[in-house]
Image (cartoon, rainbow, N blue to C red; front, side):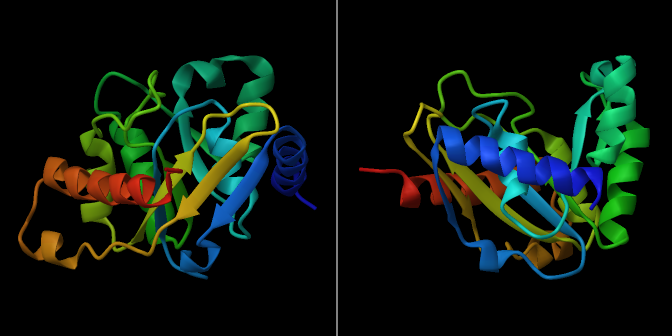
Amino acid sequence: MSLYDVGKFACRLFLNAGYKVEVIGKENIPDDGGVLLCCNHISNYDPPLLGSYIERPVHYMAKQELFDKPVLKWLLPKLKAFPVKRGGGDKQSLRRGLSYLKEGHMIGLFPEGTRSKTGELGKGLAGVGFFALRSNAYIVPCAIIGPYQKRQPVKLVYGKPFDMSTLRENKATAEEATTAIMGEIEQLIATHRPT
């Protein structure tokens, strides 16, 4: 069993002990091929939640500063994370992400780039649109509906893969692709949020 699998098991135990986790739509994740999971971001618990309840491993971008710490520099790559420099186009991490997708791996991205302080969906950054347009990966919108409160429901929804072919054919910009993906995430939140 790899360290990633051990971590995934431990995260599931922790999340199940703290919250009433409901997972919807796992069947929407393709069994193989490059996949881009695009999710809203409301908590530091979002990355482990997004990846702990599905079979395929998820690679994440993590801020470069974390890789400067000795223990995390060793641990994060084993947990499928790779560094990104925030505040500008980090070409090396963009190339690495594209390479993972082209090799048939799965990447989890939070297009807002940071946690929402209000819990409402924020504006997405162009990076997710770049990955979506420059790869032939499946785009799977995801929604986390909280808030994370002790023994309260937390809903994780994996939507159906989003067809990017029209946007690619029309040579859409990264910003336009991001807007379309954020619309899919927003729809999932609206559909599954408790009334």
